[in-house]
Image (cartoon, rainbow, N blue to C red; front, side):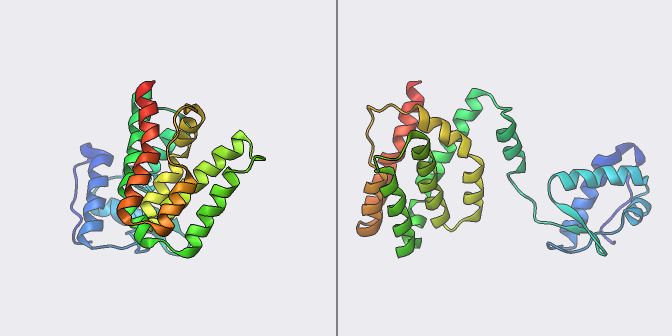
Length: 225
């Protein structure tokens, strides 16, 4: 515990939390590595166990530490989007914030077009074509169309090969669904079927253009509100 330094009791949990961060970084700890016991931390830092417990509870909320049987507290892989997910699920956001987050989602999807194109596989394209075919069926109702729209874009995120993007897309689904239901029927962007054709037979530049045309309709609609 060489990187831990005593703190004054008046600084309480904030200082202890910072010391634990410093300990993790200083010891180059990885996921699964064990942290010192609560009582050892309290003794070294010269604070009560209640203060240590409070600091550790903050780290648990962030997903940075977890308790395992027979191993005690260990370092975990934190979820960078846990705070955003809670805000989305609870609906505690202003309309301006919701608008900004939705625009961010569109910008991200436009930015990952090259990754999608270069990572594409035949089975990926077949899956996208299957979704597009179901959308064109006369038997498909409005709610089902919304589900298929989300499924199509979820597949594109998956094809990017980036786990962080996939996680973010899952969190932001409610925003996307709300925009789908409010789109004007007068606006006719390239369809998912068009996207499949370009992805299958076109160039990366053509794919960029068709994706931009497809997604820009959401931003146009948003600005018209």
